[in-house]
Length: 222
Ligand SMILES: NC(=O)c1ccc[n+]([C@@H]2O[C@H](COP(=O)([O-])OP(=O)(O)OC[C@H]3O[C@@H](n4cnc5c(N)ncnc54)[C@H](OP(=O)(O)O)[C@@H]3O)[C@@H](O)[C@H]2O)c1
Image (tube, rainbow, N blue to C red):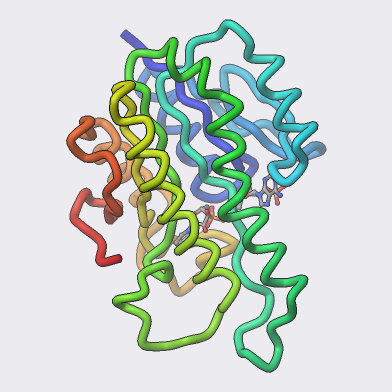
C-alpha cells in the first residue's frame, strides 16, 4: 500500500531526491516549493509554499483539506550566511530561526488533521549534526547551529505532546551531502544519503519518538 509523504523544500538538493526516490519505489510524494522552481521528477502533486509566510502555510493546509498524509518531512532549510560572531547580525539569527525552527512547527501544526487521518502519524524534522551542543567544538555558523538546536527542542516538545495520539516525531541529521548547501566536498551524494534516510524512516516506530537520529538510524548526541 503506497504511503503519502509531504516533502518541503523539494525544488533541489535532498528534498528533490527524496521525492524522486519515493516515487520510484511506488509511494506518493507531494512536493512543496517556492515558485517559479520546477517540480522535481516524480512528484504526484506540487504545492507552492514559502515556509516563513503563515498565509502560504494556511493556503497549503486548505489545498490539502480532507487528504490523509502519512509522513511529513520538514526538509526546507538554510545555512548561515555569516560564520563568526563579528559577522553575525540579529537579522541573520532571526532569518535562520524563522526558516529552520519556527516554520517546521507551523507546517506540522497546519497539517496535523491530515497526519491524524494518515496511517503513520510521522513527522521527520531534518536537523543537522551541527545542532549538537555536545559535539560543538568549532563555533561558527551561529544562526544555523542554534536554529537547528531549537528545532531539536521543538521536536521533543511535539513528540511528548503528541505521543498519546500515536504520533512519532523525530529530528534527523541527513548526512553531509553534496548539495548547494553541503558543497562539493561532502562525502555523500544526495542519492546515497536519501537511500539511508528512507531506510531509517521506514523503520521508525512510536518508540523512536523524540529521538535525534543520524541518517543511518544511529543516535546523535544532543
Ligand atoms: N547538505 C548537507 O550536507 C546537509 C547537512 C545537514 C543538514 N542538512 C539539512 O538538510 C535540509 C536540505 O538541505 P539541502 O542540502 O538539500 O539544501 P539546499 O540544496 O540548499 O535546498 C534547500 C531547500 O530548502 C528550500 N527553502 C529554503 N528556504 C525556504 C523558504 N523560506 N521557504 C520554502 N522553501 C525554502 C529551498 O528552496 P529554494 O530552491 O526556493 O531556495 C530548497 O528547496 C536542510 O534542512 C539542511 O539544513 C543538509
